[in-house]
Image 1: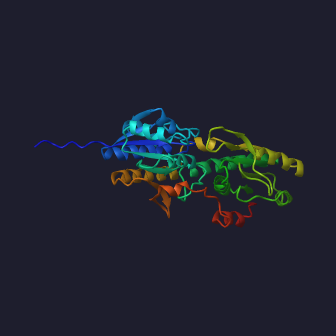
Image 2 (image 1 turned 45 degrees about the vertical axis):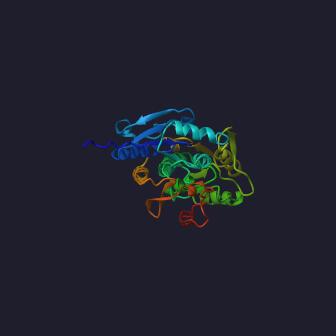
Image 3 (image 1 turned 60 degrees about the horizontal axis):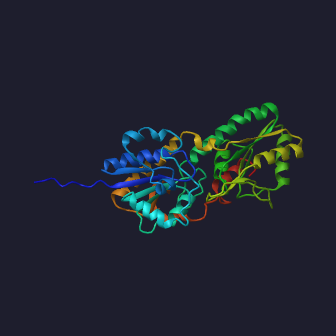
Length: 350
């Protein structure tokens, strides 16, 4: 009796938006898990560009072996290409690739773009952003690593702040959300944490700093989110990237704050902008476990043909949710969040 051959599924895998530590972990976990199921994983290069340009690579366990330990993404990414106005072209190119389904790891821009072309397409979403502000999941991979970068920088800079009697302002990423500044600043026991969700009084901040100096403090560490602002004022915009879903780029707040503190208090101040260092470090163990679990859950969803859902982290475990859950407004730091209360309990200005 002749054996019956089973057609291997062709599953696309795309990484979109800004890179985040853990993307390579998702790639390795997905590829190795799906290979066990007899699936071919077709890597789509440079986000949506790979769809429109038919730019792909066949990913094998040998190619991705060890990728989990590296930052960045083997597939490349882009946050500039949009699907608006190109919906029909996307559908045609998707059919050209002859995929049985696609896995997309991305942030709000990626999922906003996918929402325009998802009708009839078998998709699985994996939420990703170092900013930790995606709706639908309690934490995103890359966030823990970004916090570690901030905390380690603040810890290191405290030595020079005290040596030179300076106030050092450390600027963290995060756009309109303060998660990175809050998590990294709290882990480093910063003296001040400034986040977009809590506009602050100039007078109160100056009094806090002056009080600390009166107590004999030689140097202080301020961790400020790039989108933080004084009460009644707007966040600092450094420049715009035309064509990007998020055209405005925050920046310049730490420098402005540092110069203002020096002028108002006659206390020498310096600023440090961590920028893309928060993206470029190898993922922490926490982020490695998260992406390993998410990748394996994705493979199980493919095996069950459980499409048009997202793999998320809720109540301490990796689980599934409607894909639409990721397409909601950003998840911001609540005023009564326990980390805010912890900071206040340590008499950190926040």
